[in-house]
Amino acid sequence: MKRFFLITPQKSREKGGIQNWMYHTAKLLAEAGYDVSVYAYREERPAGYFEHFVCDALILATWKMALPLLPTLLVSKKDVFIFVHGNEIVDFSFFLKPLIDYLVRRKRTYFIANSNAVADLFFEHFGRKVDLVQHPFLEIHTGSPAKRAKEKGKRFLTISRLVKRKNIDTVIRAFAKLKEEGFDFLYEIGGTGPQRERLERLVCELGLEENVKFLGRLSEERKAVCYEETDFFLLPSIYDRQNGSIEGYGIVYIEANMYGIPVLSGDTGGMVEAVIDGVTGLHSDGSIEDVATKIVAMTRYPFDRRKILEHARGHDCRMQNGFLDFIGGRLYGC
View 1 (cartoon, rainbow, N blue to C red):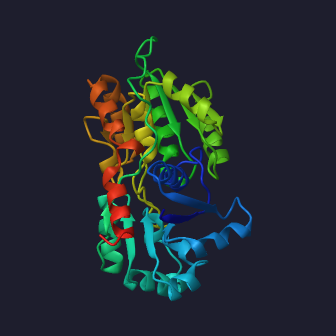
View 2 (view 1 turned 90 degrees about the vertical axis):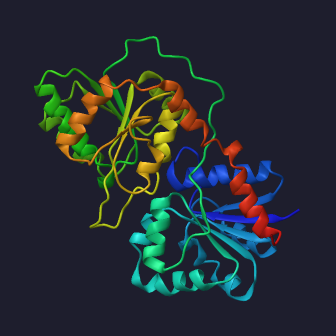
View 3 (view 1 turned 45 degrees about the vertical axis):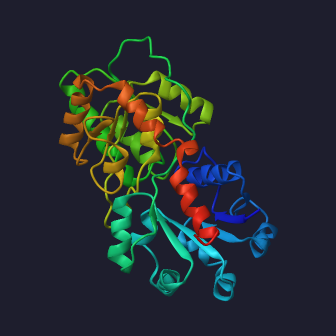
């Protein structure tokens, strides 16, 4: 049996992003019959690191995971699969450039981008095409979720790490504008992060305390309830060029779609692939005016819930045969 060693900062479906994808990658490979050892270096004892010596192939959550494995990479001919998400290629320390230059040149090293947009960025920065574009996947609930019995309309939700790039302050300002125009709504924000206090102050300054609620960190069970109770999901992220931060894809949009919920995304990076404009949601340029306009448009747009669910099901981890064929083919020398 071929054995993989997957190294990641953390592995948890509750943490979202890279952590969520690595959790499901390990699960998918294990269910396909591979032996998979996962080392989450922020969570586990250093002893787990040494398991990589006896594996057949390495899976790196990002190219930076190569740093602690560099001695092995230099002397072995193991297959190495590196996931590329976006931020780590638009913002990296200059002293790490020799490492990624080495990885780009190393034989039997394969790069997997989470979107075509990120694949283009990778080629732009390093002059090499990625070996596979694979949209992130997760466990999709089977069957169609029950249609919400409450009145359809003006309940909105954001679940995200509260950082600048997520553009949540703009959503709050857009709602303040809409409230002045008589728009009635409830906006709930789930998640934690460095922007939490700033966003809470903004809500108070704009007099939106009755309309905007902060939910804090959410368990998977509580998150599911939030999705079931909301009507629209909002996360019009922006490309933060100053800090080198981009939305490489956006699995949270797929999570919302899994419940039949239309979403509002940004119009940069991999978001335009995660969200089909006019089908599973709408794109926004991230400005206050456009976000406000799109929020109102969402409440009037005739979204087809069946198409939203179909899009979500395409991200089911049990349907990623192309990904398994790619990794298995390389591992067996195909």
